[in-house]
Length: 382
Image 1 (cartoon, rainbow, N blue to C red):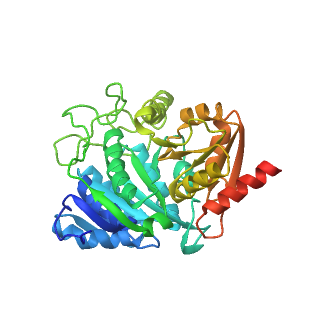
Image 2 (cartoon, rainbow, N blue to C red):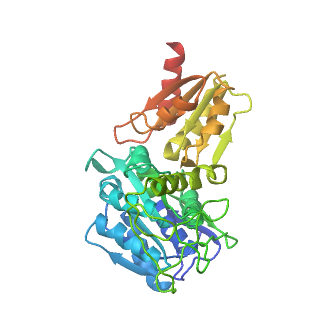
Image 3 (cartoon, helix red, strand yellow):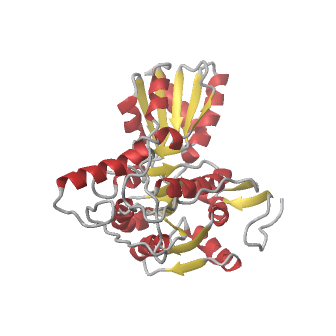
């Protein structure tokens, strides 16, 4: 394996990278040229890598005074036409949420990387957890849909960062890369390829920037400085951006479109992987670092004569309820291992027809294959 090259974009090949480093390199490959952030463990290596690499590719890096200013700068940069991102962890994400809501309302594409740590509050700053799953889904006010991706390896920190930018540009929405400390700080091989699909936002001069455009419900997005008459507000607005805070019809049409542009395209957005599910009687549903332990647990259980299989969620939001519902009709039980007290398991219960078992771990340590195997066997015996 070679070391990181001092070029604007890494050439194709095999590299030994940390998850956070892979995220930064991938953002550059995706076309990100603006980063605003504030250092916070365990995401700081993303910011440090970006600060080190951006001078080589004419990017703009700003360390802001806090996370509120960081997400504000990212939104502003996006409206100038830049692909923009920030990275944080739970406490910093809490500060960003009001302006993430603003980005949702103004249909501003941007990428927010949340490297989760043990909470609540300051918690354990360098210990892994998966406690922000519902925070990214429901942290902003009002009704909306969001996209959140969950990598389980350094390779996917790279691949899914590109995917996050593509989805953000395609659907004009903030996209979360929701990983955990264990994946962010994991160091392993990452394969970089030259044949990468990059999606950019639609342009259509003279078209309303907030109106329905085609079947995908995503309007074109002009940038400031392109000669368009732009009004950008977090208040209820019509297709031209004019405030309509007392108009019930405009409010309903806007909120439904903001949700439907994700919901009606969720088959294009959601992604899962299946392992040993062909004859499975017990299905394990997991994501992030917990899914790596789950796959090993499935193999151990199979050796013990238990027909287990894994459904790995690469997309957490929009929730892949169709594939989970289908799985629940084929297996006797579903087990959901996660490093929180039960967040995704509630969504699984909502769409499942079989018994759902939760396996939680919240002590600041990664969940292990042994934890999953023993937890499942205890439940079966009882």
